[in-house]
Length: 90
Image (cartoon, rainbow, N blue to C red; front, side, top):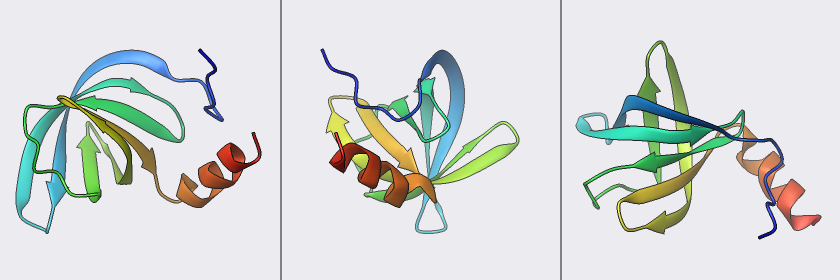
């Protein structure tokens, strides 16, 4: 399988929170992460296309790139535009 990521992801198992609409919070687990994005495991399916991901002492605004059963693939802003340009050039 061809990996089109611009930066390598590393496997982790880290608790995090998804926050959207300034008040809704959902628990999730970060399964892998890179400088540009992450794969999240979650039990809730009501996650919007854009949200904030809070983990330990860091936070990222995220854009959903793909959805699967109990998983989301996200890209971090401000890398969203750069990542799209990278994948368009492949």
